[in-house]
Image 1 (cartoon, rainbow, N blue to C red):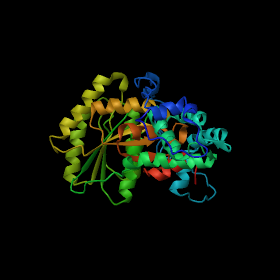
Image 2: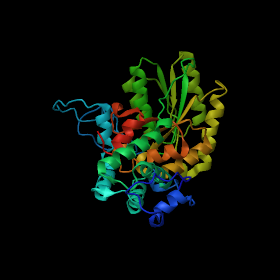
Image 3: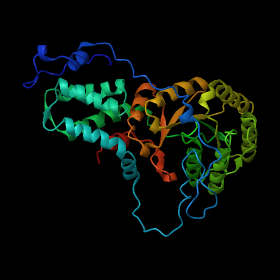
Image 4: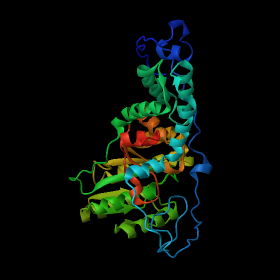
Length: 391
């Protein structure tokens, strides 16, 4: 638990000091912080491995078959006529995408607080609920401390608790909610994209490329995950759809050499952006670490300041294992920002708050669906309110 905080003001409903025990004594007595719950090692071959040869049939003809291992681009869907639907705002899509995470929290908080006094036992149970929602021990402690400062000993409703928690979560998230800013003086601005296989790196690159193109920027894509034919082919599909040149080589080619060639061509074209995909084989960490470091060394021969951005893409469905992945990739490369994907497929959305509280790395984008519009810049207030099921 975090550093002690000042005791709440004495009021008519406050319990006598000798009654404050358990969680309250730890809160105001400065007890030692509990250790973080252990997480599974990221080198899980089942999670990290993904098929590269299997393709799934598509019900309607499309230019390319969907590729296994990552999300399917939004265009790879049935061409049958659909009923017109009202276009949702980003906040509505965010709320829908976080519905699994928010329903767990809202249901749990409603069960705990039905005209109930915010006492020692209630705070203990609330902290346990937040931990099960993947906010982590330290973050759950900070959120409940903030709630106790202003409301301890008072009757509270579930909505009041959710509102207060959203405010505390937004306060923790605000410092990391930073948009990705491209340096217009760089031609190109080089973005190195890293992460484990299956996290959604290639799809994220494609979605970002589309958004950059819509802004009128010129973009080149480099298929640096040379060991997975599926990743190379999928990036080529995104290149065709977005009108971006894709630099690729044969399977097993040297990734650093490919990155060098891609940067050389991108400089010659005076591109605005170069995005480099990379492998993510954590089951062979030493080889992967050397490969990523070699990519950095090689492209710095052409531009000593490159890469200008190093994005770590994280799959929200892994929950607390995301902490371990951040640790590993921070050791390998200088990670400058995070992208959190697949928040719509998990009840573990609270991990975003935990990562912000622990690492303080900028969260540039979050993804809550398959379309390019479902990847958007991270906004602290919107995320916190959606996480707590508030409109």
